Length: 385
Image 1 (tube, rainbow, N blue to C red):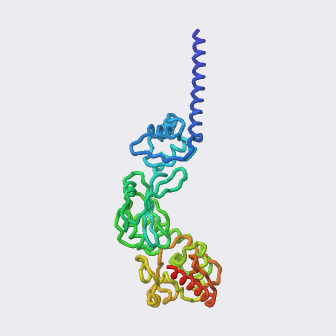
Image 2 (image 1 turned 60 degrees about the vertical axis):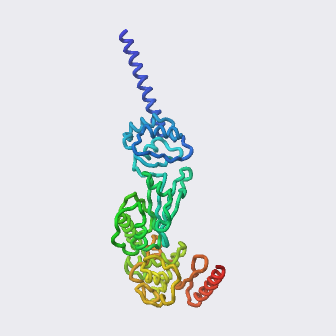
Image 3 (image 1 turned 60 degrees about the horizontal axis):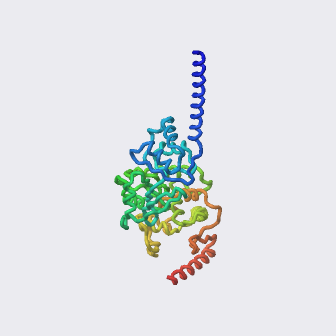
């Protein structure tokens, strides 16, 4: 009898272990399998929340099939206590494993609201945006100039939300003075800036920041990135360039940046200035004259006067030989690359062509014809105003 009982108990134990193993295997499969979500969602995890609430919300929104398995998996993988507050993008078909990783890893929000502070050449702009999970596109909620416009209610609301993300975007061609003035106007940042960074040494790019971050830290990140770019681009330079140092490359790149906004033209514009430097011709570029007038503190807001073209300044390339003493703006990576790898041309002249680009020429006679065409276009444009 005891032998039969022991045999039955053993059988039950084996069956139980088999069933338990099968259950664990099934749970692991569910944990790693593609989820049921058909359209991406933005999951908001509030401060003080826990894995139970999150799992229930995910199940209600159709992102997971079982809140229980989700919680058990979080406990089993020791991730339950690593839950982060924020707004997280849960993509369509995301597995439980992927969702748990998303909400317990860095803590950086991947969807929801974003306040972007854009520093442009002529103005700064604050944009409040919301990510549409279905399209992964940002939808603009509000936009304003912080130095001129009334602050919209949408901005104030998002500034008060703990999971709002912040970004500073610096456009190519802005001056260091403009960058500092713009950062001072961004109320999400802190700290005083006592010194304007050297012209040209701030890398145009997009920077993730946090509310309360010190302005000098952001400026330092911009400088560090620009120095890395300068070092890398200088090492890749063509042979035979009339540039003696990375500093001269940076100056030339800043002139290229201010002369054209057409990406396809950068190599041609660079070739004009390189050819002029090689031939001992003056660069005669208007942006350098403008910098001599404004010192980079704002925009001129009008055309150059003949007296300004004739007035000597350290930056007036109609009056000085070679390159000016400093950059005239902060150039982007593409302009740096153009400075050390110009197109192979014989161009030494260019003028606007009325389309936003330029007409290039090898001879003065050809250039004069291009100038005459541009004057006609200007006259037609002015007569239409």
